[in-house]
Length: 216
Image (tube, rainbow, N blue to C red):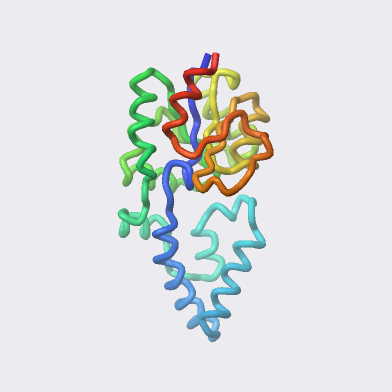
């Protein structure tokens, strides 16, 4: 019987893209001045460092890259200064509200650092969750079993009685299945394929109502 659902944060519950589009040009400008190069070269160097660390522990932390280039920027400050740039998908709050009313335990598992909690707080999503687990809690990122099991143990729920919901086939779907959870892959664009890896494929959160209804 399904007792709990765990959720990814970015591009599952919300998008930070409007904030990224705001600060990246500032990063390129600052970096160009610091390195004595044009903005295009600064952009290439910054993005090259990001892409070279894809799926590593550091890749999930904007502050790591700010420090790497000695830029006087903090992502927490950007979130708090421009809260309207963190956008919750409109289908998320009503479904989380319904799940809570139905008695399900809800949690977050994220490979991001502690500032993920700031995103949840400023958007008001934090009130829905019984546990929020970041990489700092276990010293590892998804798909490490540790991060999922830590959340489930906190909720006192066995993996077979929980569903992992996220947009990443590697981190969320593989990670969840690897510990024995059911998985729901959210693909809002509908452009990609999961090769039938996830237990469920959804485009909107509203489909979660049907999923929890059919699971034993």
